[in-house]
Length: 154
Image 1 (spheres, helix red, strand yellow):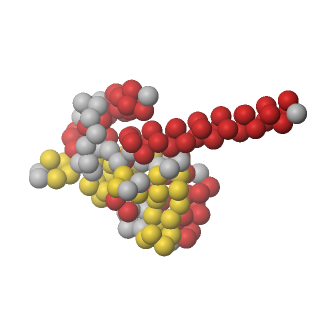
Image 2 (image 1 turned 45 degrees about the vertical axis):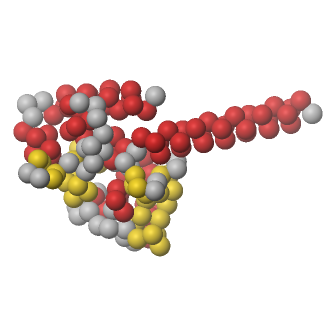
Image 3 (image 1 turned 180 degrees about the vertical axis):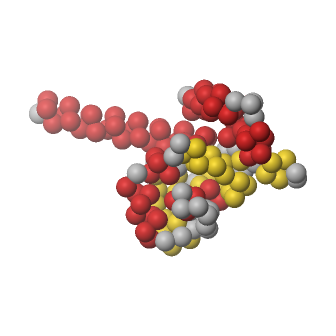
């Protein structure tokens, strides 16, 4: 009986932790009704051209929903979702790096760096992807953004 109780208690703790993690992600990720990337297909970025996904082809990853332009892309995402999920919850990478703030993105302003997807603000003549590219030390931007993002997620 003690073994069964211990197993059940462990499962409840794991489930509770997963629900808490999902709630933190939903609160901190750039999403609209828990849908990420303004409906863009995360795998499409790695194929060279961002494409809109459809609600008919979707997948949930830790409480955040992603839409896909094809079942092939959805299946690829499911194999390794962390590979395709945008950095910093899909907020502007340059702004997270420089101020720690969350700023909306233009889903077509992006860069793949060392196999990771970075998104950027690009409105009203303020192209933060260009600022990132012109920065004297883009690797330091990544270090800063990683630190700022870790603070936000805790």
